[in-house]
Structures are given as C-alpha cells and as structure tokens.
Image (cartoon, rainbow, N blue to C red):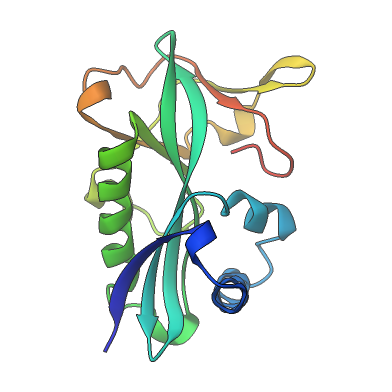
Length: 179
C-alpha cells in the first residue's frame, strides 16, 4: 500500500536520500543533473512510498522571490517525479496536493518551473502561470531570463491572494538552472 510521508532533508537517512535520488534521476530520463538534485535538498520532501521504496516525490525548498515590489518567502518546488512503472495512478497529484499544504502552511508564495510537459497538470491544482517577465538577481546584477517566461507557475496563499501575476518576477541566483 502506498503511503504519503513528509520529512525534511535532515530527517531522511543517507539510504533514503540515495533511493530518492536514484528514483528522481531515473524518472527524469537524463533531464535531471547534480545541480537539480542539490536544488531539491534543504527543505521539506513529500514522498509517496510503497514497500519502503519511493515511488513519487516533490520537494519544497525556501527561496526569496520579489514580486509586486515585495520580497516574498517562497516555497519553491523541485524534483517532482513519479517512478515510470507507477505513472498514471494519481501519485504525483497526491504529492502535489501535500506540497500545496506545505506551501500554504509555511510560505507567502509557492513557485515552480513547469517541466512536466503535461499541459494543465499544476493548474488543476491551483497553480497559476506567471504572465510577467522573469529575472534573476545574479552576482553581476539583475539578469533577464526570457527563456523562462510563461514557464514559471505560482501558488498564491492568503498572504499573496491579491498579487498581480503580470509584473516582473525576480528570483534569487543559484548555480545550474536558476528557475
């Protein structure tokens, strides 16, 4: 029987992290690298576990995004994946519903870069496309990230219910994919 579990990175054992890493890398089929894995660490993981093995996952890590002239404590979602032989069973949906609760309970805003290639997957769970221009605050200053426009989704919380989604969105810099 599949069960959902929520744990911080620090609460997971080395063996659990290893199994999780293998599952996520395999699920992405070569589209996930070491930077992506590092981005998924340091926050809260929602895991679907079956017979002690992870079969689906999503992580919420803290970031600061700037929108509407405000710095927002953001739960940024990383590493959403389902093991290939378990896809289509609603596991990613269950994980993302729990991820939404983590975001609403601890952050002003949720955000993610939509890499699912499944139109409407996140939107049916309340996520909205950021319609404004995207930027990253890098070591050299503000950098425009046009290639990410239209691919960043946000989950508003009561703290950001009135946030307009058409202005600039600025992310904090990080190695690898900035979004």
